[in-house]
Amino acid sequence: MQSDAIKIEIETILQLMYRDYPDVVNVNQLCIMLGNISTKSAYKLLHTDTISYFKIGRTYKIPKIHVIVYLSSILIDKSRIHFRALPH
Image (tube, rainbow, N blue to C red; front, side):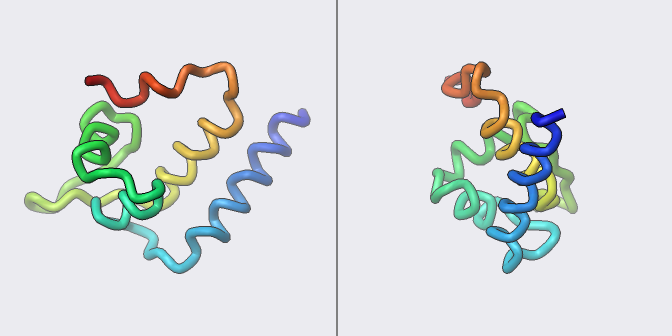
């Protein structure tokens, strides 16, 4: 189960990277966490359910753990084609 150990290690590293962020982030924080992507790209990730979120009123709230799971899945699954993550 080397893959499971690698996944846990990657998630631990990501948790350390994002320790200064709150447990639930907004879209602007999500953009920064993902390397300063545009808000348009962030909303595409949310609307395609690539990253799970919930809304309070009109405000998008993204649990930090969902960002970590998304990034770790990209880093672990090298065979997945990631350029299709944002449909145009």
